[in-house]
Image 1 (cartoon, rainbow, N blue to C red):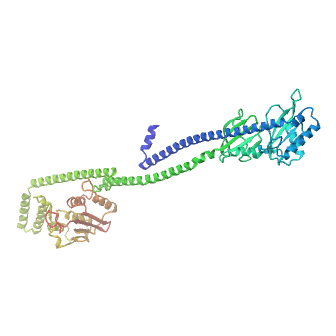
Image 2: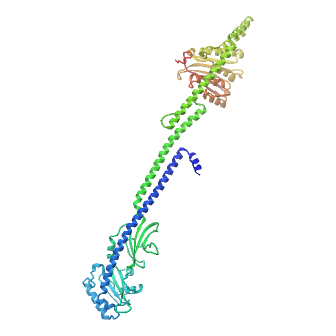
Length: 601
């Protein structure tokens, strides 16, 4: 598997590899950030749980203290003689009236049996049955029927037991009820069975309990208190928020509740002596809100880094691929034969170093091929010189002169003239000496052309018209030997030879001052060259003189190669032709005033 991935990666382009590496790096960065963010959320959640647990403990402590206060008040009321007589089994209507009268008188003095109203108790009620009760309340305008319902609710809702357990009555019994009711079952001390003599119900202001909880109130959590029947007594948050129990087996504990697409952290504790459950509910969104800004900032920074990275990679990869493409183009041009093409070295980086070494290698190869071509040329010259030596030109010249003398003795002037022209052409072609024998004046080259045309006139007489226009100012200049006669020979043999009459060949030569060179044109009105053959010829002429070539047009190609090797690729031979209309050959050579010295005008 790893091997396949490695092969896949190696086959990608440089730009794709860079993009893939950036993508993997960003993915790893996001995964790492997610892990760190989850760890931070977990630690923050633990801190919130610890903080809320401490706050819940303090709330429960204050409520327990308040419960102790209520127990003390209840004990104080139950020790009153009037109360004892009323709840005894031997109570009489006069005992009830005396207790009610005593309670009413104390209410005018803002005390209940010396209990100050500042304790949060606004009154109390003692009920022996659902219809037999006494009450006093300084802050409520409830009717006697309402108190009867309250007494009946107490006896029907709760099973009377002895002890100091308080039961919270729901405040939802009446809409107008603005206090909480704590019911305490009381026993008849005159009875041997300690039967329940009724209930002591304390009316406690809700404000007093809220004041106890207010010092713990914070915006990031909700305090919720319920009674034994899960009725909500206090709720500092949304009134519709139901209590959430952490576990069914144990009301105390911690849990996380999911509702409406959000999660809430819930802590709960039970006040057993009051049958109350106290909840602290904190939305987890408030826990993670402290990290939200940092998370958004991180993702923004990551996105910015990704965009900048991709932009930089795009620019960088384009600069690399562009330069590699340039190198590929240079290699393709050299493969096609343009060995003068080189990679442009501009910078000093690794690619430029490779390009510089590549150029140096091509220079060495070019020099090697040039040396090989020069060696081959020297070998051909040596072979030619050896052949010329074997032929012994003086013997040939003397033999031709003897034949010419014999023709003159026999009065055959025409034959003698032909032999003279042939001897001149032969002497010009195979003349030996120094290396400078390859360079002649244009005048000497034209004399050889005239001899060739004279030989053609003996054969074809007046079938063709030859127009020669050579400027006198180029005659003293120098050129390579045998660059005009082969082109003129091509014009006759491939252009106008098969024409019965009307064939024309025009030969012009003059200085081209615009290009600073000598320009020759040989033009015929023959059959011309087909388009596909003309394209092949032009391809051969544009190729390197060091490349190996074979096929037709080698006469013209060899002349072009000789000029390229001697004078450079800015000079040479070009061909224009229209099939059926004729052909024009243009030869461009430099202006050379000294034999072989390469000096120019």
